Image (cartoon, rainbow, N blue to C red; front, side, top):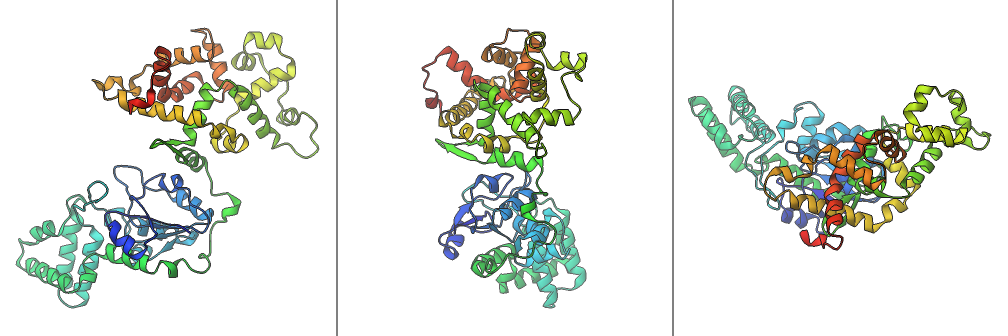
Length: 455
């Protein structure tokens, strides 16, 4: 069993390792991180801190996917407490005062736990979270150190501040204009000094969670009240896309997602049109009822009301080239039309499962990594216009024409070639080729260029 702890700035690495010496310490969790780390059934993930402003925050379905994989997910203190309060009916385990405050509706905003902090590895905290003030003030109020009016005034000042500016000193300054508030704030500071467990509820919750981790994760998982992982009904196209995009491997320190590898194969694999045809046929035939004659795809098409005779001249002109209509047999024309019109919201996971050798090609994964290194390197040369975002679409379309051996300016044939590879249009294929263009351009100008040295 491995324990992954996503933290910073609530706890330091030393604090975590002092309690869980075997912990694998991860940075604050963000969108994709849980899918990128290949956890195994029986592992434990502890979410303490997470990013939400500068990048997308961890999504709920990412956590559901990890839970469905047999991993126990525990949340506390900050982003972990928020997600645990939202997902505790589905198996996520919450712990601590912040979790309970979210769970019972005492607080409901992510601003409550937000702080500004520095970069890794220290994640130096530069502001204080609102929930820290709430917890400290509640303790002082309960102990009779301050009255309710002063408590509301202090919390009001703290809540009115942007989370990036909220601090004990800033709140104290706002209380300074009113003698009663100033005296109450001084008593609050004295109370916190005498009761350090009230000083930082987020840290207190995190320490308690790690200390009680074995207890919290023992026994059966909480009942899954509203979902059944094995049914897959909670899946959607976004989750499938994220699983393919974030899962991958490191190549010389560069993360290459499975989606990137598949997209490269889709663009440059000489045999990919045949692979795509086999994939589409398999997807269509999977819907065929038992007893459907061979070929099964034809029986499914007929059940849909689609036959060689039912194709209108307009449809034929849109999906088929003139020479294909003249030279292909009727069934082959129909199959070509089906392949080019096939749409799936998230085909990558299915394609990788059906043809795992696409992801096993290490030379392709290295080519993708080299592409990313080159893009980052050349973007620093002179002006921003050198970045891949500024490559014109007609340049990318010309690149595809050359790669696929399609006559330049033959838009219909280029569109057909793109559709034979699973793209909806030549333009969408050009967008997919953008990250890889510079590498191919450099290779064409100097085939022996040591690309890895550009790093």
